Length: 125
Image 1 (cartoon, rainbow, N blue to C red):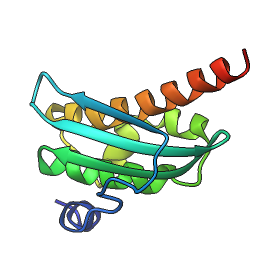
Image 2: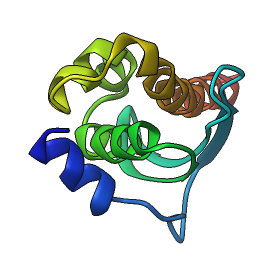
Image 3: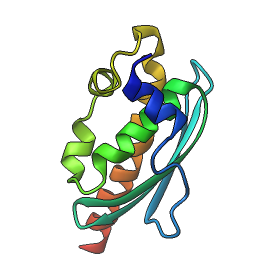
Image 4: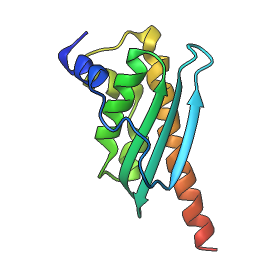
């Protein structure tokens, strides 16, 4: 376990439900049973805030923390392109058999972005 992994697991960043959020997405893994809920706010195509709740393992907690830090203030396209391998590398390496935990986190983030993009399309109608 690397220092950066320990830091994100022991002191997770943004691990709370924000007072205000635009979209929420809860995803669960059928493989490991982790449940991740992301709450996200947007300013146009920029992620202005993100918080989360995790009922799961250390990999899910550290991954959600890392992802939340990576996406706040960034455009949605950046957030959509983050891969499980990117998060694994950032955290110092996660075994392949644990990457499902990261994928659950990313699925929740991508679902919020999907909701945001589709709500923009509906607003333009």
